[in-house]
Amino acid sequence: MTSRSSKVTARPSSEARAVARTQTLIKGQNGIGTVRKTTLPGGLRIVTETLPSVRSATFGIWAHVGSRDETPALNGATHYLEHLLFKGTQQRSALDISAALDAVGGEMNAFTAKEYTCYYARVLDTDLPLAIDVVCDMLTGSLILEEDVDVERGAILEEIAMTEDDPGDCVHDLFAHTMFGDNALGRPVLGTVDTVNALTADRIRRFYKKHYDPTHLVVACAGNIDHNKVVRQVRAAFEKAGAFRNQDARPIAPRDGRRTIRTSGKVELLGRKTEQAHVVLGMPGLARTDDRRWAMGVLNTALGGGMSSRLFQEVREKRGLAYSVYSYTSGFADCGLFGVYAGCRPSQVHDVLKICRDELDHVAVNGLTDDEIARAVGQLRGSTVLGLEDTGALMNRIGKSELCWGEQMSVDDMLDRIAAVTPDEVRSVARDILGQRPSLSVIGPLKDKQAARLHDAVA
Image 1: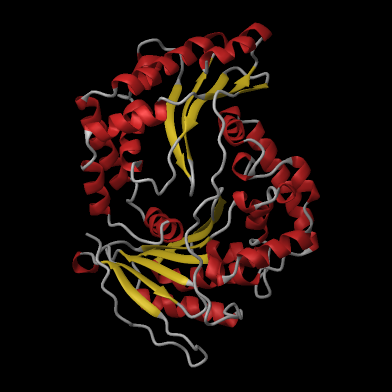
Image 2: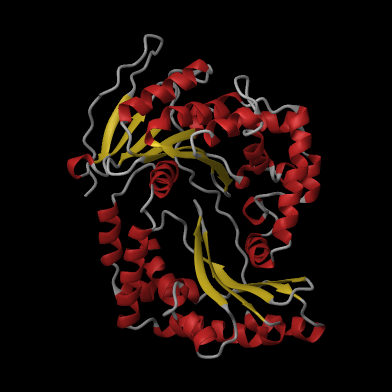
């Protein structure tokens, strides 16, 4: 079980009217894997995981804002802002930011998703103070100058073009639109050429000030670190920037969703002169807080999570109809997606879709065998641990957990929860999810007769 004992270990500055609260959320053996959390006056949360056996540290700041927080006119603003925070502050130019991390062999990057954004740096443990200072400076002191907006617009338009040139990537954006339509979850994270061209420095600057308040941020750090030192360095960086305008502010709660409407039985085809047809067949899934997500993870693994999965065996191994075929889940605050992707020759697209649909229908009605479930449980437990073997993955886990769930779960608790999934639970979630009418997204050079038959896959 997760330890939640609490003790105050940080002394608040003389300016603070509230007390910094420090808790031990997970107590690891001999300090290894210990997760601590401090909430500063002003609402900034700092979560760390200690791993003394490594010589690196990853420092990240998670923002409680993603593309689903954008209006149609602001589509792409969150991702645009991600680019602009690297363009310079009062203290550093864009070159200064990149050169500081390059000089110590560090890595720095960011990513934008539909419900959050993350900025991070991975460095040697001795260079952690530098990483903290640079990333905190970016988050609190970005200038967002008109000239930088104009320059970066070209880079973002090239990124959009690059994505559109990769149909295996683009088809997932198309599937989100197929399922959610023209609302925030259905629109692309990058925005479109039209929306990006329409965004101005003033609109992006207002978006920045609204969503990058300390109450919307979570600082996460993992590696060979000292929690109290990280807290002191982060606090000093935010106070220097004057970021704590309201000392009594409290962190915002995890996102609770908006009851997003999803469609079923819809087909969208994007005609492209590609060598392959890229397809996603899927249906509504589970929200990330749904207790059935553990059983859904096992089901997804057994269906399309590896070389022994049903879809891989039926589509690739037995028939050679596709090189890449897999299933996946995406969980949001209030809803989710389950999808099956395959890339195949256009002449084979209907055969591939029929096999995938038949397998989904069969599992919905008859369930998986006990052997398949046991194998999927073992695979999921192993991949969970192997996916947490570096400080970047650990930082991602604790940062996302705090932002999205407001709590932490130890690796042992996660493994126990996966192992506790029963065949009945897997069969139940299979009936609920796979028994729904699917929707379909396709990118490829399909002829008129082929396109007309696509509705057969969702009938």
